[in-house]
Length: 117
Length: 117
DNA sequence: GGACTCGTACGATAGACACCGTAGTACGGC
DNA sequence: GCCGTACTACGGTGTCTATCGTACGAGTCC
Image 1 (cartoon, rainbow over the protein chains, first blue to last red):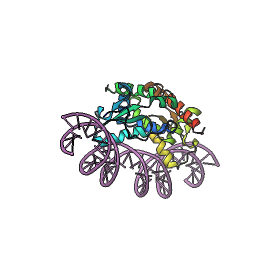
Image 2: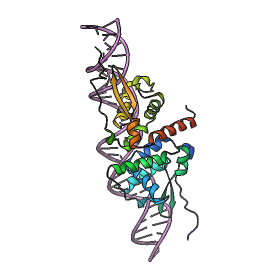
Image 3: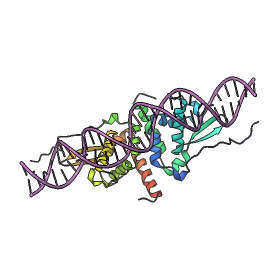
Image 4: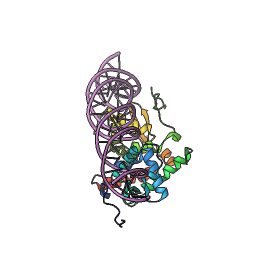
């Protein structure tokens, strides 16, 4: 049976007012997490955890997604068996205008500079 | 005898091309280091280490200044017995346009929001 | 219900981090 | 040369981080 209710289990997210710049910067200072955020920004708003092909085990990936969620960078919701991840663009843009976009731009630029993609 | 040469001892800095965004974000994710950078941005370009009234011992302060220098955020030079610190604005603005300014703006905004200064 | 998929929880671990204290070096002034 | 100031280097310590493996829970499909 399918309903329109997303799911019963939901995960603890910091409220907008609880998001701290230092925590966001710390979250983004890890290469793996920065990559996740870049993919989220590029590919749209909702991606499942398993969409990302990360060079770590699943438990490590879970850990990184949790760091991103607890720092307020992403929002996670269960949708059936998958867990969808979305950037908290709205909140971040209100709290720290321009930060997300300039950071994403800088990351893209560096990636290009270092021969990545 | 005084000469115009700044000093003989000089400290290892990463070249512009070696500065990594992740390292910069990590450097700025510490409250103490973010505070140092904010003061540097506000007060002009060259401040001695002892100018800052940090709530840690001198050896810990030395450690934080080294993290900032090695990540490419600040430039340090000896000037007599003092060690002067300056933001690497030029390099950072070329590598990551807008990042430093939006980050400083976000830090100021958060500081205001949280009742600081 | 049973199998399968997706993701979690927990425990372990090696390394990094933030911090201190003590001892030492470099420079400037007397 | 001697002393004070500014900062460093080194060693130690407790905590946090990133990683893994194994065991488990929630949901879907047959």
